Image 1 (cartoon, helix red, strand yellow):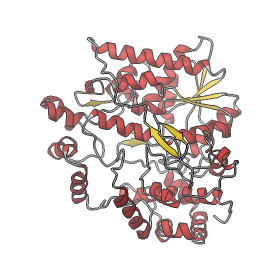
Image 2 (image 1 turned 90 degrees about the vertical axis):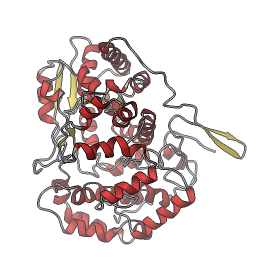
Image 3 (image 1 turned 120 degrees about the horizontal axis):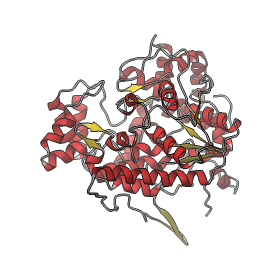
Image 4 (image 1 turned 60 degrees about the vertical axis):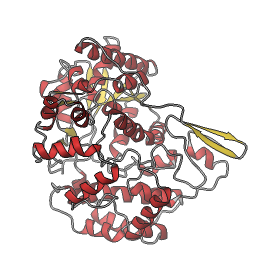
Length: 495
């Protein structure tokens, strides 16, 4: 028995590096085995978040010692008390982060979370100190198209934010090198496994290596903001329905949302009523309504029909519910927290690998346990109020950023320029797909013919609809990242 936070250390003991191809196929089917001990290699597992592994002679058990929903409710008399308490915990976390860094920097976006973190860091730093920020943007060839409800360029927001903070020093590295596979093989030298989030993180490498070359020793982020200060209260509509809070429910369902053309009645059924149905019935109803997106595997997952049938057979044998199903709307706060907990279970190898590769600390200021538990204990109305979502974050942001940014309802899209990037490399990627055909397991799992067709029939502009965009933006990049992982693990260079 061997244990290590660094996977390569286990291979150094002589354990064979044998890929678990069923696990790989599950990842490509977006079945991530969150909160399960299964890993990417046969004979090697992982410790799920909030758990410990107990080994006694020939028996191994999982002790799930931490329950993320077993936290106390947080209730104050005054509405402003919630904001003051959240700001105090952010300040506490910022001080902890700065205690471990002599030359910090921040990965800054145009949203709410990282600017709020930047403001907390500036308050915690001595007055004479400056805070460098690093922001990614799209390449020059981007056509400016982003999915409805999103924006594709953070840089204008960051520049406007920096004008209000004289001690912030924004940096905007040339985004050209940050392809979907930029330094992926280098990262695999340090992680050995790709994790569920390894596709499309080229810009992480670019920002970290630029900061490291500037002499920064720690890159700070606010990436867990969506699970803490920026919670959107997805469970609010079902909760309002159960409690008969009709005015709050109507305000939430009648709000204007870019790209959502559903009427209030349809949104009432989809967001408030349907989540109360059993999960299987929810899926059947959704598949009837969205006939262009049928099935239990996302249509943009580029799996062969054989791999899809194998996946379904494994599910029948395991008879387990998928944790954190992204197709479901959580009916309760507890369901939402468990879904977030599952989603947070797959990034630790990636964070450690990035830090080791670039020789720079990589810390999330919003991943502070007291802050997480505080936010998860708040009343729903602290996240959704009069139809306005992310209510806590918007109040924390008051006065520290331009009002247009504080009230922005669109979400940032870091890879909005995928069409320009992949399109410029089509000939190279087509050759890679042909070379992938020499690998027996890849041929069985990944639909190489569909990959080739997607690359050959390339749209002139970024497609506005998900049916045409997602198989290319997500399906292609995940399949190519899987091939790179296999090539790295098996020490081959033909693809």
